[in-house]
Length: 427
Ligand code: LRH
Ligand code: MN
Ligand code: MN
Image 1 (cartoon, protein in one colour):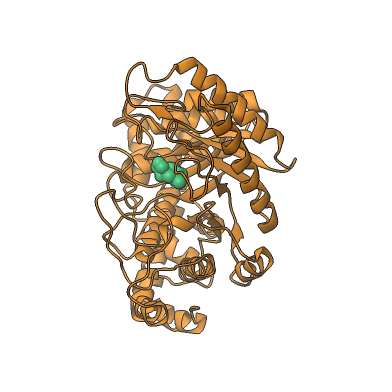
Image 2 (cartoon, rainbow, N blue to C red):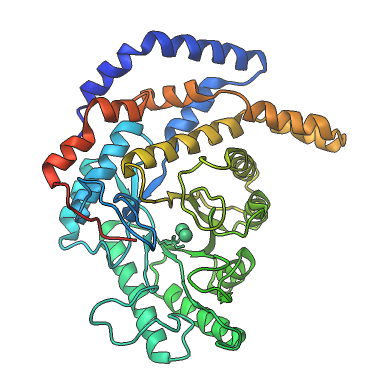
């Protein structure tokens, strides 16, 4: 199914009187603080976030999974779903594929479909955290870190295969997340596991085309509960440096122990030009993968404040970041959930763009701690939603995507087309 853009325009028109009133009030208010609201709207319109192919179905927990109905059961349908989100929000112009869940049978046809829907292929993700049918060697005791060179070689070969598939689609990066680690003291030799991982990553890096980047995710625990080989940003940073200039650390918001200062990590990595990618989600306890902004919106704003600062002070040539939502669970309509995440991302970005960096610097240099806090909190407490709505309208998308999604009865159409009892491939 495709969204009828003229219906979106009608819906936007019906709310225009309400929207323009609040927008103009906000623009005047910002102008009185010397903030150019129109410039912020333009930046918001340009901001594009990739949708992971595995978030389009109703995700499961390890205890159970409930079908939502109308879920995509193949890559083509997943791309149509991203097309729906992109038409409604104007900010989801990319998809991130997971191999082997999303191997295209006809890469050219898939590429054309995506291009018709104005969707690019973001980073491709390899998967050595599960054994696949017919696979010769197991990853039960690790993949890139395994004591067995046969398992390691197989995992390296898989990553190279993923790069080849990505190349056919026009992707320019690979994201590596490893489940490698141990669950009991003594089970694994830390140093040998790290050494093997470093060596395997270098072998994958060497096979990347010269315009490709590698993103290395870290995560402190899960699925292993004693030690994880790439447990933190420092380990990822070290491995990325060992691989080369085009290897970067990827920050996934859920991959930190409670109370970690993630904005500080962002700042440090950007200082060294080594922040490559970002996975958005939210969490209360661990890698909960909840809707972005649903639990800790102030933290999200503080992270965006560092991202904006980093992008403005790009001395170390940090590349443009690869943004992706990495959230999925089993309660909400997955498409509504993703649109809520996109909304939260744009709101936090808009709030961060309100921060007067020069004024903040002056307050910091004067050690005016209260004023520093006020500058940040004034930005955070501004209702920027009219700016986000206008950015969507400028992109010919829906001013209120979820309302439009419901009015256009998108889920019902998907269920009619695909049935109730379908399961998306993925987590
Ligand atoms: C596991 C994980 C990770 C990856 C994704 C494929 O923690 O969520 O964040 O990006 O699986
Ligand atoms: Mn992730
Ligand atoms: Mn995760």
